[in-house]
Image (cartoon, rainbow, N blue to C red; front, side, top):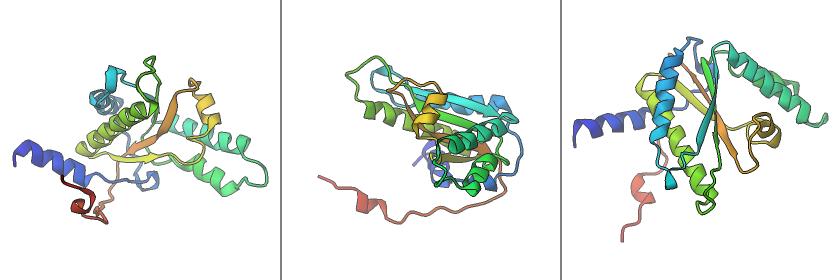
Amino acid sequence: MNATFDTLTQIITQRRTIKPAHMNGQLIPNDTVTQILALANWAPTHGRTEPWRFVVFAHDKVAQYCLLHAELYKTHTPAEQFLEATYHNFLHQGDKASHVVLAYMQRGNLPKIPPVEEVAATSCAIQNVLLGAQALGIAAYWGSGGMILKQPFKDWLQLHPDDQVLGALFLGYTEEVTVGKRNTDIDAKIKWW
C-alpha cells in the first residue's frame, strides 16, 4: 500500500478500550485534549450540521463529575434498587483518569436530516477523538452506563429534548498493553454484487 495507509491501519487496529481503573493517574495537558477534540470537527456530517458537542472535565474536575454521576444515581434510583457498591463505583470511576469528556448530539434546525444521521455523525466524531488519543499514546474508554443515557443526566446538561447523550469518554495514560482480536473475519461481513 503506502505509508499513510499503513500508519492509519496501525492506529485503527491498535486502538483499544482501556477502562479508567487501568489508567495511572498521569495528567494529560489540556492543550493536548483540545488537539484531540479538534479531530472531531472532521467527521462526516450531512448538511454540515456538525452536531457533536463536548463537555470537558479536566484534572481535579473529574472528581466533581464522578460525584455528580453518583449523586444522580442515588437521587433517581428507587430505594429498593439502590446499591451502595454501584454508588461507590460511580464516585471513584475517574480516580485514575485525567479527563472526562461528555459527548452529545445537538439536534440542528434542519428537520430534513434524520436524527439517526446526526447520531451517526457524532459517533464518527467520537471515533476521530478515540483514534487521535491512540495516535498520541493516550488510553481511552467510551462508556454509556449508569445515568449517562437517562433523562436526569440530560436534564443536568440542560439539553434540548431532541439532543442525545452518546457517552462519557475517559482519557488518561496507562502502562497496560492489550492485544485486540475480532471474532469474525471481515469476509463474513461483506457481500459483493
